[in-house]
Image 1 (cartoon, rainbow, N blue to C red):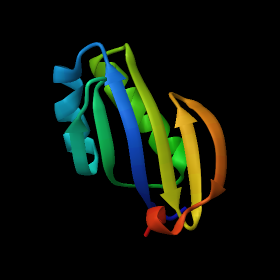
Image 2: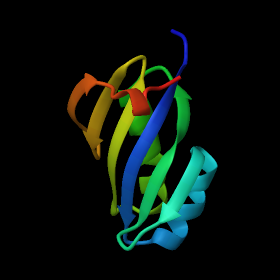
Image 3: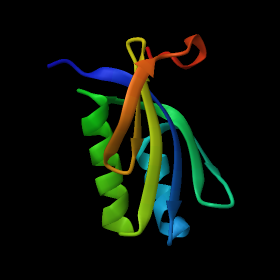
Length: 101
């Protein structure tokens, strides 16, 4: 299976943002911006599918701080997949401004 480049838009909150922030910056190519509740992420990741990328990102963050939450939209090939933590919240056609590479 070939890797696909996914555009990631996410909100990450954690009980330990000082530990999670540097890891986010290592894992995601793009911007990680601090917010009142944690971080806003707008970047790119490469992988086989959105579910696997979401699982690997959240698992890595939870190895640092167990009480970390991820609300994410992964977009590639004209489709956006939404997740809350590990749970899929559906898919829809991507808007032109958020299409993946």
